[in-house]
Length: 181
Image (spheres, one colour):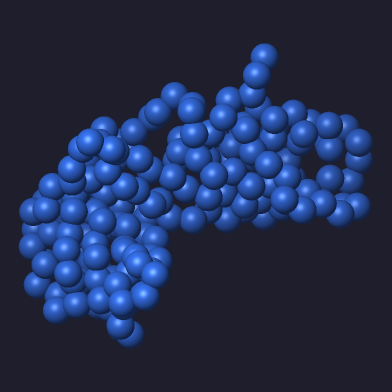
């Protein structure tokens, strides 16, 4: 059996209760704090947040926010964000029209050969990669859909002492589809 490739795996979209907002902002000090403050003041729940420069000259950053739509109407969230001075553009990416990816890194203690063998099977089945090894631990990486990262995280729960970190989601519209503003 060929292990699943995290990019070609069955696509499980973000649950309907979440919305993916792609927000282009001026790359200036305090912008992210103002965005987070807006969500906190309004009682909106941020499920995931990722920020990175949007272009090579770094004048703008792209903020990908996965919001809990049950905490407030999407129109209200977009309207409040649009009022912020440094926000240039906002796109709502429908989960069915978006490509979502996330990065998972995990350091797993492996003190015996049975644990190491079990971990190697888990890594192969998830389509993950080993990025660092020493005598007592293995660091694993998976870049893939949020559901692929969820599956690997659940699989790693059976290993004691795992140190795990996941990034926030990043997303782009699927080719040939446009995001709504």
